[in-house]
Image (cartoon, rainbow, N blue to C red):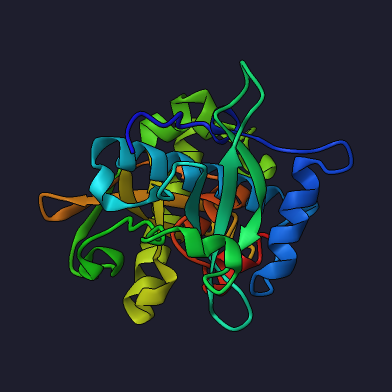
Length: 263
């Protein structure tokens, strides 16, 4: 199935006279394993939209991936949300062909599991998307050097605005010293416990998030996104804790305590 819209709301119409997208998001939350999805389920909304977007992009390139599938008479479609119910059954988004002219090609019906009768019309169930091929990509290499582009973080307004408010009035040199110290501390912590480096998927790339304690408060206040290439980790982007959790959750539910504390 080629050339799907990559925006979930261009792909399907959500809502009826009595049901809204917010209602469907709550339905998904109730069906899936218990998890904190943030205020007003904002993390779950982001997760669902991005999961579809990536599924559609990859499926448009190679329909044989079966990330989005149609049934035999093309009256229904589905994609794998990547989430599981309490019995660890995969949860699928299920759509019917939209019969309303000049609207999205599909109409959302609900979230289903393999045993639901609606899924019997699919000869192949949609696969769960994969963000990585080699699991080694997810594990921090403690012997690798970390090179952080401090000037970019300090001079770029988007990066600088993510710094703790208490240090924004400091001189650039002081912020540079604090950032470099936070990176060294993060490397020591991760060398002792490699699970502190949390994978994230951003702009088509797999990266690792490192906890940064900027003000010696004893808690992580930011995350440094680093990419492994040519034997080193390069980092030039700092994220707020909320941003880091959102990006990390696209791959899997983060278990690191420093990132969970952002919720």
